[in-house]
Image 1 (tube, rainbow, N blue to C red):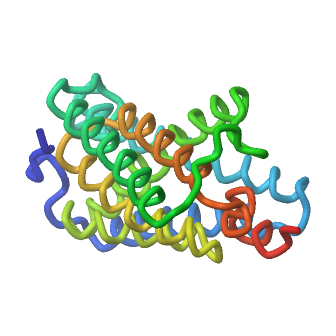
Image 2 (cartoon, rainbow, N blue to C red):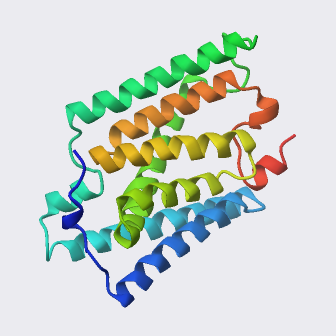
Length: 232
């Protein structure tokens, strides 16, 4: 069930709008610094700064929300409540259907599905990617979507957030395209059902499927930013 738009600020004040936009810009720039960092040490440093910044801003908003809504309502708005059976079924169903469709398309065009991918995913890498997919959905939905929604409404937030997610996957053409299409689906499902847990699971399933089906000559170990350009 979608969150009633009346529970969100109808017309933010000028100061609040600037504050929310500043949050979006700063957090996105920090993520881009991590993606385009020239060394692993710099990348890890900016990744940590990004994560801490986003967590602090979310926690700050939750505390401020306590004056107008309960903690449970704040968690639901962030997609951190218990998943509803209907929403979970819809998201999982569409995700599984998409995976079957991708496998059929690869088979139809004459591609070969490797029984044992040479680089990814092994079990350890797969579990790591599931965690990373969940974190991506947390940042994408609980931070960027909710703030875009406050500024421009939920329908526009779907497109704004999806565009930001796609830009973060440049210059990898496969992942940028997949990120845009996937984010449109994930954000719309979040708008309707308001939960990130099932979205994170389906995100991981689709990402692992792409990693198995697509040749590494195009994926470059699923790297983005400078890592994609430096891939050998």
